[in-house]
Image 1 (cartoon, helix red, strand yellow):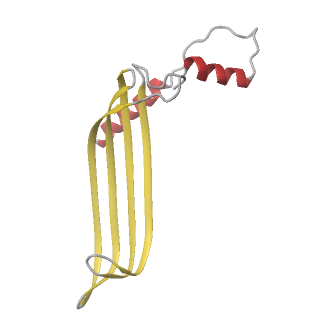
Image 2 (cartoon, one colour):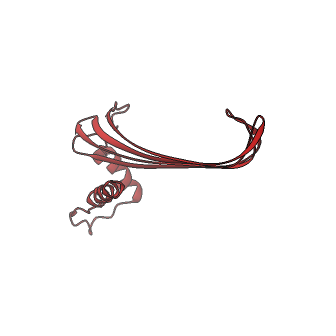
Image 3 (tube, helix red, strand yellow):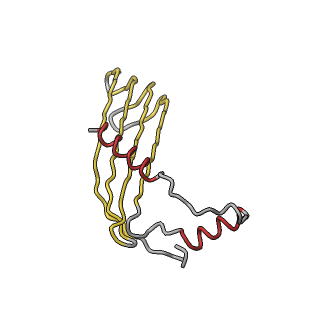
Length: 146
């Protein structure tokens, strides 16, 4: 299932990066400022119908816990490793209205010694999870050039 989602994500990225043919402008010389300002003034339409959105987010947390109070007891010595991957995608069906799907994969791993009255216990735990979340996103332009 994850391989299928990754192949769709890569396909979308490749499709969106196809270069379009441009008119011959070899005789006219523009400065970089003119090119950028004209693009943002005339062609920048990120929230228009037919545009797609792809995003990726990654977070990682690695902690070494020594004499730390927790809900189930006191961690004498332990390592905690958590990470989270979030893939986002969407398509603008109307101007300023996007329908999308988010895929989240996370893992939490703990290894260490925990004091739970009256014993000290060696704990190794790992938990993994994933979720698919559909969403609807509406956008409001704050300026005339969006």
